[in-house]
Image (cartoon, rainbow, N blue to C red; front, side, top):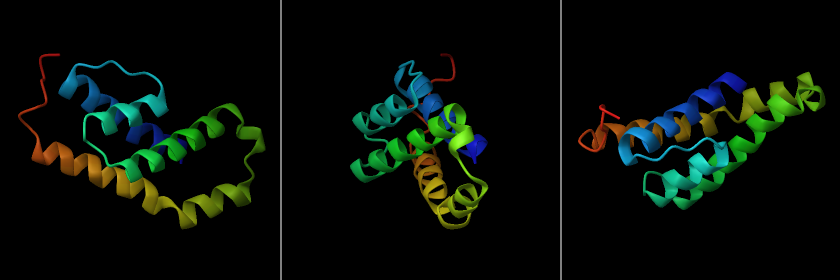
Length: 103
C-alpha cells in the first residue's frame, strides 16, 4: 500500500515538475499544486490529501497500523488509489504538449 501511494504521488510530482516547472516535495503540497493547476478537482484534492496522510502514517507510525486495518484498507479502499491514478493518466493523455521533457 505504501509503495502504491508513493508511486501515485511520484506521478503527481512528475506532472508538477515537467508540466509546470514546479518542484514540490511534500505529499499534500503535490495535491494542492495539481489542484491549483487544474489537473485534479477539489474532491480529488481532498482525497489525495487523505491518501498523503495515510502514506505518512504508514511511514512514520507504521507500528500503529494493525494487520487488520491494512487488510481493510486494501480490501475496501484501493478504488481511491485507482481513481486518482486514472485522473492523472487521463490528464497526461489529454495534455501531452504541456509536458516539457527537457526539464
